[in-house]
Amino acid sequence: FPRDHGAHKDFQIEWWYYTGNLTSATGREFGYQLTFFRTGLHKAPQNPSKWAVRDLYTAHFAISDVLNQQHYFFERNSRAGIEQAGAISETYKVWNGNWRAFLAGEDHRLQAADGEVAIDLTLTPTKGPVLHGDRGLSQKGPTAGNASYYYSQPRMRTSGTIQVGEETFQVSGESWMDHEFSSSFLEQGQLGWDWLSIQLDNESELMLYQMRREDGSADPYSSGTLIASDGTVQHLELAEFQMVPLKSWLSPATGAQYPLHWRITIPFLGYRLDVRPAFDTQEMRTEDTTGINYWEGVVHVTGDRNGDRLSGRGYMELTGYAGEGLGSLFD
Image 1 (tube, rainbow, N blue to C red):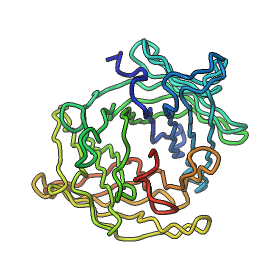
Image 2: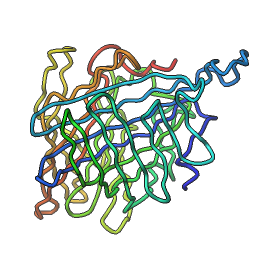
Image 3: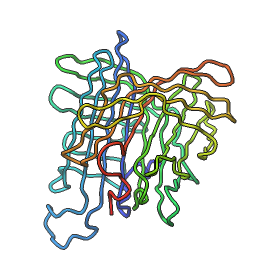
């Protein structure tokens, strides 16, 4: 680092993913998501034109206005063309039109706007980067090579502005950044995943992902990472944690039934957490880009560790509950 924040164009699939929970000076709560995807289509296009497609660049941008229970979502597909979109390997800069993420010293700068919804944020890492899996290699299934390089900046002090409609808010809070790159996706029979990133008030962070199989069972390659307040990293195997759905919400738009309320336990570490959505209607319907419907939004967390009360906030992503399973997406 910082080299590995940049693009890895020898790999077919790559994404940079930011989420955050922010509060205005008057206590108004917002969540945001800004994600950039790079998908390799033709490693060496025969057409020498600048418009020949080597990589497809996709981006998703969303704001959750918790007070008004409003979820704003935008999406883009672009080719590199004449600098319409891109990702640089030598340093960290990724963009899609006027949506961009880049380094300013050690800070991450995020800018995105669509109509009257916008963010302009500065993120300062206070912990990390944290490598998931085996020294950053996260195995996704039994097939050799079905793995991704995956790391996070799990706690980033954040400040800047959020615009919603005619109002612009000075905000502050904390963000989470994921960067993942691979040349494979899910295995056949893996429908999707339930993923959580949580920042707790004891200064620890938790990432869990539970991949689901066609029979509804949790895939044995599900895993997680717990980062202690001092930065110590504890990798979690499926047998060491439980994610139990307690309550679901039925999307009137897609018919998907998403489990939005969860009980999370890590018995050997004494954690017992309840995860609830800030509001239900934070569904992402990406008909114009990936064609995938999924739920992605702000969650509130309460619970305890060995009897000591805990609270926190985070983000949750639920995929594979509508449409075709994701196991064959990149076949």
